Image 1 (cartoon, rainbow, N blue to C red):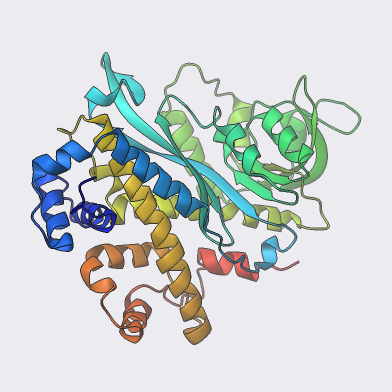
Image 2 (image 1 turned 90 degrees about the vertical axis):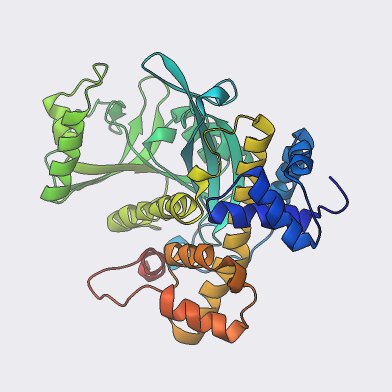
Length: 400
């Protein structure tokens, strides 16, 4: 990289442009020049956004992921070393990038879609893993990514997309725990080895018992099923009826299944009650909120424009934005969340804070600390609503 283009200016210039949705080489070069105090041409920048730039961004991201953060005490998870959420999100890219990021086929045209796999430690809000692939590398194929990060007494929370019996078995073999939604097509057996049909299960408002799952490889799990509110069950059925995939068998039993939230876990009753199993799973929505921040506040979906086909530029852009997201979580969100909870007992909304930072990037880091705390208190905290519990409160209040 040219001596006058410093890493600081290269990265911050890109972030500024991305948050303003102006990501051309010309605009990026202008931002770098302003930050570095020199003149940088778009041609000079273009020549430097190559495989070396993407490798540089990858190394910075890996360094940020290794950053240690102090674990936070959370009563709901006090029996676990760490709590890992695994999920993915996708980015639509220009069709010419389908060779690198193969997506779905629409009207005979191969689309380009990137999938970002993430592992988030929920008690510290620290990302532990990012990987970038095409859309066709689905969540099920990425299920085993979690196992290389596991330690004894960790807890893994994932949705049905990652449901693979062999992987759940491997998590147990590492003396770790899992909590997952259960698919309706999985064979379930009681402790005597008798098959439990849906008809036998779906006659109570709740089920909480140890069973075996899997037709060939039988895995011992705790099955927890809770009947959903009528309106929520009706909405799930409505969405199922709209799905026209002919490969799906929508039987009457399946529609009864949709009236329940069904979970499997290897966490026993001495650690979690039936209700706590369901409440623990709700924390998975924290990563969905974070994905919303990425796309709504940080414009992740917009950083690659339709005319940008250079794979090095695309990889560098995505990796730099993920780096910025890591730094936002570690240096901004966690810091001010902890500071305000101690000082005012208010709870910072990660979504509101991301919006505020994106709209005020240039002023954010130049404000004095007290002024910034006042602004975050006024504009970025949850409102006090006795009838609603926000996600941070949820994982703090459920005690055994």
